[in-house]
Image (cartoon, rainbow, N blue to C red; front, side):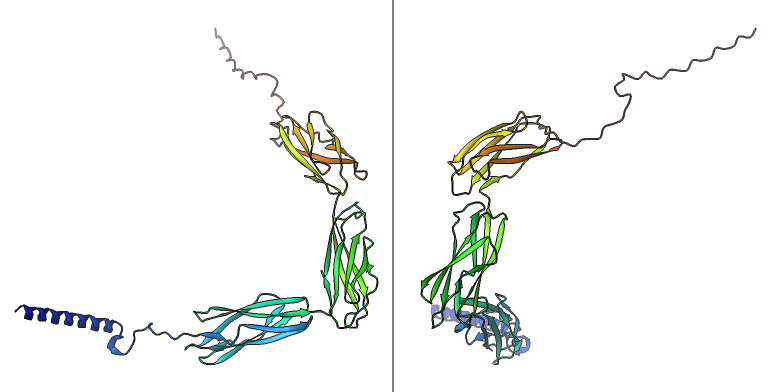
Length: 379
């Protein structure tokens, strides 16, 4: 009897399992048993490139590189290329395949302009498409660009002090990449603020162009062009642009003091930093403000190089509108014997004056009450 009960229980379990399996299969089948339910087997596109990188090798500066990247639609739906976005203006995209059917191929042409490059270079472009697994693909064009004559750097920058005769020069290396040696003429400058000399490093192969600034340079920034003639027919002349960033020998920070509107409600301290940019150390002395009541203290922070002026304006200070206010200090620099920092202060605004002539004449008496007329007496 016990054996019969066990068999009956096992049979019930199998029937329940079978019913559950059939219910699961029914859930995966569309109504009417027509096949898979909607959304379980959506057709999608796929993009696959033969190669995403192209090495153009070694080319001459100025040459154009054109390469078409080939891709295949490996999916089951139409592949759409929504856009191609180069990373640099030197790289442009041509007319690419906009839509590609399953199993078909398309192309994306890229063109690179090497005019402004030298040495190893790598440029990219991003391809955006409707492949959900690869919505964007990066393509790369790379290689090496060479010039018959290399100039490094193309632009020379000088940081100079306006009245210093010991500013460091800028050195430009000129390298001949041709098979035969070349000769260069003496350099010429179109700005008298610069002079240059040519120093051979390896005969006919490499040279150093040494550029110096000629003091005094009055402007904040000065520009010039150094030119040389060459014996090469490929590059008959070389031009080097040079910039000079001119700093004064003494830098004052801030260049002026702006006080709150006066009269001041409380003491107002401020600090001025004076930095010496010249090659020689400098000494400062005798700080003074040209109005009374303002304390000023001079401190040497870095010997001969940096100083501070600490000023303290008292409460109630008001600068006269008719007299300029400034702080000065003497220096040992013969070209800048005095440092002068202007001081400005606005006036506190308030309501306009009222024109009340009787305001300060004492209290106004109350108006007099009218005196009643005496009644007439009739006999």
